[in-house]
Image (cartoon, rainbow, N blue to C red; front, side):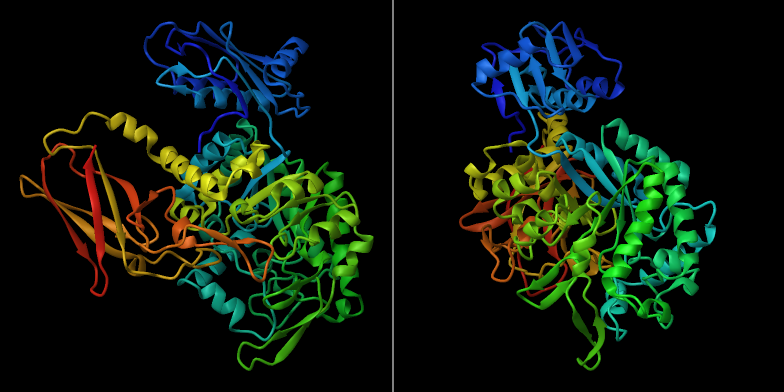
Length: 637
């Protein structure tokens, strides 16, 4: 995918950003971005890059005249005028950041490939939703924020739950660590507890948040500052009403269902619930200093169970809880967001009633109905209009968009998956706000790759920044996203290694291979872990001239996939979305999928463990029998 602005005039001759170029700004982020593309010396060089808050009318007129368009009123719109030095213009600091990033993207080996560029986003909210990192994953958290910033995302929603230190209630953190250790004992234990153990429906369990540990408030504050320095709107997510296991491990007396040994829903009729919840929310507000907060309310199943709550209707319980929390947040100048499916009388064409509809939970042991989930959807009739909705049922039925719009509720597409989303241009005109994509697993590179999150991130960039998006085919956009992800991961390493390989010595090894082994795809979320006993299917054993040996793992879904995966997408039979073959999607970023003689191969780059030694041979060693690994080529770089 060529990361270029929608409008760009190419110069008749290239000029260069060099060490002589002055970067006139007080923003250190802008300086860091441009320093990465400077070259030592070349002529003609650009004498100065200037950042200008505000877009003069003469610059607007120049853009409109040159490209034959009307000027966007988005405050994130920017102009790069490279005729006299380089001037970047925008009405906002965030727009200047995007102009700076775009200038870097348009610079190759120091040469600037534009004389006039103009761009603007199609939607105001372009976001990612993630967990807090484990203490060991803080560096990757920052790398992900850098990547989201590079593709001009402006929002990060971070689930906090039990994964941040609470000074007023340290027992919450103690309970969270103990509970997470128990739930994370083995892969899929959370799903056993959630779906196979009890005769009532339970929330999905999020004990990978923070790696099942917690970060100090000081550390979280630093991460929030890191995001805000890159112009991200940081929205803390604090599950309330439902998904509240983090609150209840040490306060089971507040649980709605007293017979649940792992309660996930608090009692909204108990005043002590709000004393605890508001204490916790106040600490989150102090650390994040947010303008908005997501208070959850999704997957709310234990409704009207206790004696006090049985006296109330389900819609009343739901709305009253939202209003209590909203009143608290309003006093702190924080706007409220919720996951909105409980406001829908929803029906999934594959498995029946869901969301805010009435239905019965069936016992995992007998298959008989045991637990009634009462309807909550009529709550939408008296729901506050200034609460934003995360619409994550967009893929179940597109008509649910209209339910929210009919009730004057603003919504953002949540759990967004751009490659699966049909009729984007038509639907976004109505909803207007934008979308936030989610990762419901530990914040690790392998998880985000294999869950398709990184492919989603890059593919969706075009949906957010290109008004001609739907005039292009999925095949074009898919292949561009594959190439762009591969370039993003390996581009710098390949540039640094270029020309160094000689006489069997190399910094990098490029391998293109495939396999006839097939392991059915699983997303690694909600307690499903990547088990290398399953996914490591072999290794490349490297022999060196001095007798040394080293190995490179062959990991199914990590750097290799089945040779017969499907590259196409098709509309789902049971939902309003496209179905993709995620066996193909999960290997993107770490590999570049390519077709060779009708088969799918994966090209990936490995570091040579001993770059100063001479390689004399590389041998494939499968872990087991019954399948083959096919090597197309090995290249030393």
